[in-house]
Length: 434
Image 1 (cartoon, helix red, strand yellow):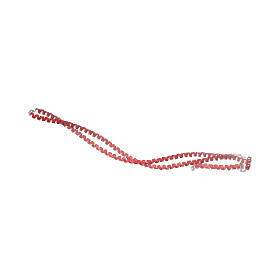
Image 2 (spheres, helix red, strand yellow; image 1 turned 180 degrees about the vertical axis):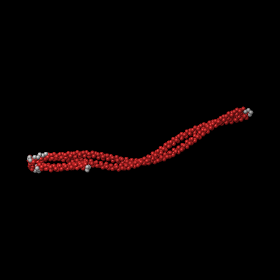
Image 3 (cartoon, helix red, strand yellow; image 1 turned 90 degrees about the horizontal axis):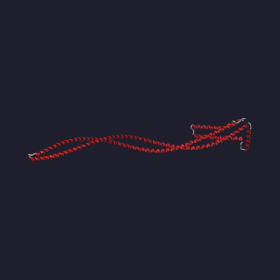
């Protein structure tokens, strides 16, 4: 009966401890489930588990300490009065020396007290270690809070810069659209320039061909003029020859006149005697022959001169035709160059339009360049903030690693406490019963 009462007493003493340990296990399961479902973060889960573990281990320590004090008071006779303490101690010793159930229970109580002392010592050590872990957690949480604050500031900076970049990007898009429209206009002007250039090319080719024809005509004119010059020279030579013949005829005429005069004089003197006249007559006959021959030569020369004059006329007609053709080609060239000047004027207008559009493009380009510089500055700030974020995230990762290590220490302490409790239960179960 006393043995049953002892078991009941031990059961009542250990029930609260097992209940608290069960609460710890259930709480950890609940927190892990909330963490798995994304209701809470890892940091909050660590905080909740640590806080509840510290509180429950504190309660366990307080309960065990209270029970231990009671057992010590009963088993060792510790009271306020020294005399009473001594009497209770002697009485407890006598009771343990008994061989009946009461002695067995007292010895069991004494062994249990020794076991509880070991358990309390382990709990005390575990509690001190839990306090150290709690302090470590506290410092870690402060570091994490500082890192998160800095990370949050960097994130805000990145967000603000991103908004600014978005606005500037929209403005740049408008400028780029305007540049696209201007480029389309420039393309149209370039097409017009190409068409004008094609026309100019055709005009230039026509002018080149006409100029080639003019050069050929000029060569022909030169050849014709050279022929005219040669014919004129030949005509001049013929005229000189005619002049020479004419001089000869003039001399012959003069001599004929003199001979005729002499013949008249001699005839007058001779009267019947006209022998000298015969000589003169012979000379006159000779001169007549010479005059005939000269006349023939003059006729021949005149004929040659007429032929050459005809050739000169023909050459002159050819020159006239060549000059007329040359004038026509020159008129065509004039018309082509008039068209070319008109096309050049259109090209100049198109170039002026392109110049204006290029100036506007230059203005947009300057604006884009300025905004690009701003975007580069924001990008540098974002890069710096990102670097800071990465560094603090690395620190946060290290902190989480420390939290994991601390959690493993807490789990180790919990395992020790559970081990002490199981050891106590085993000792209670193997007590001998008489």
